[in-house]
Each structure stands twice: as C-alpha cells, then as structure tokens.
Image (tube, rainbow, N blue to C red):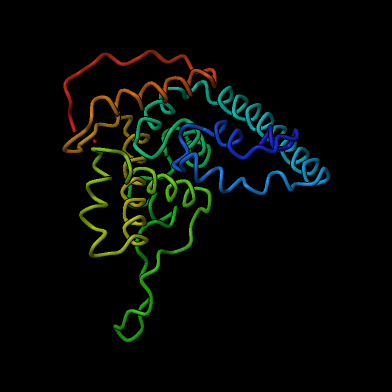
Length: 240
C-alpha cells in the first residue's frame, strides 16, 4: 500500500511486496492490483492520507496499551495467568481485568460471572413454551472479548476448545457453538482470577512446537508492554 501510494504501477512488483502470511498467490495479487497503473494522482494522495491516519492511530493505541499495562503492574501475575488461556492474550487479559478486577471478587461463582456477562443461555417461557433461547443482555465489553476469544480458541491446535468446537458444531451450528465456548471461557476466567489458579491445557493432541511458538509470542507481547516475564520451565505435556 505504501508503494502504491508513492506511485508504483507495476502489479507484479507490488505483489512481491505482500506479507508472506497472505494466502493469495503472486498471480492472484497481480490480478487484484492490475488497475494500479490507472490510479490517478488524487487517488494516490487520498490513499497516502488514509495510511498516515492509520499510522497515527496505531501509535496512539501503542501508547494507550503501555499506559494500561503500567496501571496493571501490581496485578501482573493475574494478567500473565489469564493471557495464557487459548484465544486470549495480553490485550484481552487486560480488558477483562479492567472489567471484573484482578480477582473477580464481586462474583462468588463462575455462574454468577457468566450471568453478569450474559454468556449463559437465557430462557423466555410462556405457558411452558420456550419463546427464546438467546442469552440475556450483559456487559458488552466482556461479551465482545469472549466472543472474539472463542473464535480464536477454537482454532488453537490441540486445545480443549478446538476439541469442544469439533464435538459440538455439527449439532449446534457455528454460532451457538462459539457462544457455548465463550461461556466455557468465562468460567475459566473466574477460576483463574478468583481462585488464583494457572491455566492447564486439557487438549488431547497439543503440538509442542505450536505451544512453544504461542508462548514465545505471548512473552514478547507482555515484555513490550513493560511486564517482567521469564520463560516457563519446560514440563511434560498436560491437558487445559
């Protein structure tokens, strides 16, 4: 995008600058960029302005992330334990703790937290006939974080959440399965914060290399926010 804004018109050259993580082939990228030579100077200037705005927003977000991390330094242990849960991470852990506190002390049980968040199945009945199985309204921030975490957790290779997704999706469908996983994640959050327990993976086929990469990424992110984190001592695989 930077090169496009600066005047590059060769689709093939632009395609070689793409992020290696993109699934598109060089040929597909070249085809998508085939109109590059036709972009006017005005359009390139507009693109440049949008990229500058994006860069400013990313810098401001980085400053806010560091400020939030500084405010949560006293609760580093809770942040680190929560961030280890598949689907979560440093940012999600900080958001959750900002909403419920480092010990979720207000909530006496995981069911109470799930009810407050609004991830437990609701039931509206009239004359013993169920009219709605939708979950009740709750804390919008927590619902959003847990929904995103559930979508991410079900893709974590070898995790219990991936197993649950595969087991439930044929019966419940994607949306209800994600909601069920969000409910399970909410209960895990309460156990980790309220009881001070670490996350233990109970998946059946955790890939050690995948787990090591995720741990390395998590430690790098936590350190970039100012947390003092040391790599865990390798232990035999257990399940989370």
